Length: 146
Image 1: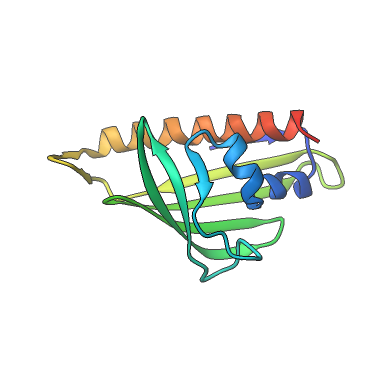
Image 2 (image 1 turned 60 degrees about the horizontal axis):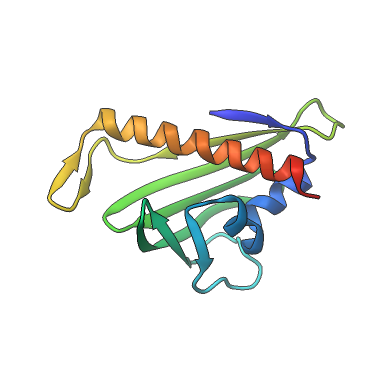
């Protein structure tokens, strides 16, 4: 899924990579537990305090690919859930102050949760809803915050 944001790639990149901004626009992130200098870089490990619904948890993020202003691909672990998250930024059209931000969230077809398994159709619906909410939040943040 993707959205067009009325902001240049530098602004969108900052929203995706500055821990102080991430915890404002991403309603699920509460705070970084241990944000190392230079976040994000490939091979790094950062822990975030997050809220899954009303349940506080720790999410582990391990950036795999970081290409400044272009792409961030990270492995995320949240309890028993393992996800691959990829953000891609493209200037549209070239030379403009508009950015096309794409987000991909991949997980296995079944996700174990306490006492049950969420099937692939539910996983797909939950992932789609999460991507949509995330893209809307980033868009609103970047377009309304200098």
